Length: 321
Image (cartoon, rainbow, N blue to C red; front, side, top):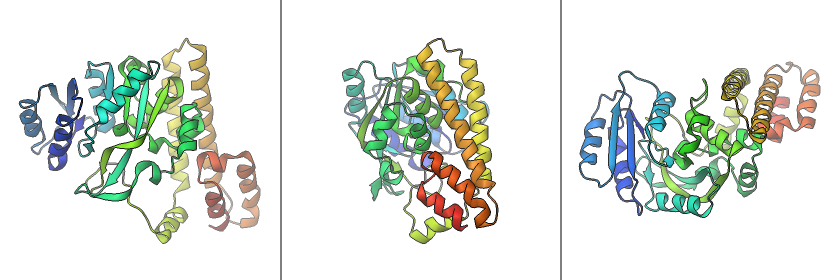
């Protein structure tokens, strides 16, 4: 777990670790120079639980991704769970995930859903996978190592809902520039190893005004329309290009000897490049509807609208706007 000025909600997350039906073997916490009572809460918690709590305070602020890199590198167990500082784990989470690893000895990662709740842990009436439309069909494609599905639904594979075998640590670290730790780790493990899915929420994902990422409040139709028509496709295309370039640099440095893994990583790079090209094509369309129609037809016939955007909704957006 990584912390930074998380005193407001931290205690509830720590208490949920203590309340697990199968308590953790260790809790590794890397604090990114908190200035509130975060570290005091963790030290008090360490004195009252039967498992090891190892707190590391960074000499300088590392930022979320680099801080998680450090925490992952310090873990000593066989299975690593990633945790945010402001969520709550349901009591059976560790036991359920451990059961899947035990039942499927070839499993290298286990992904679960999360219930979306407000700042006071009141359910908002939907889960993460409902919000991201990560249905059973898409889950099966993810477990089948389809890179375009893993890319499109990366937000469904949140770090706080993911656990993986520590033997893969050297493959996923360091995290490439521009990538978040959870998107990269889940993507690589799902692509080159065996991913198992528990299709039910084992986390309470808290929504509050201070969180860094992961706001899943439902939006009205007018709000969704406004977001779609004001989307900065040029910025998205630039980010996609940077993600591809940094992923390529990292994958080239892996020096993978296994042919099957190498093929999967090559396919991932191809899909990342294709996504970048697709977003560039969308952002570079002509102002005239007639002139941009050939580009729309080309992206539609290639299937890229469905692989990397929102299908016919994005087609309509590009034709109308």
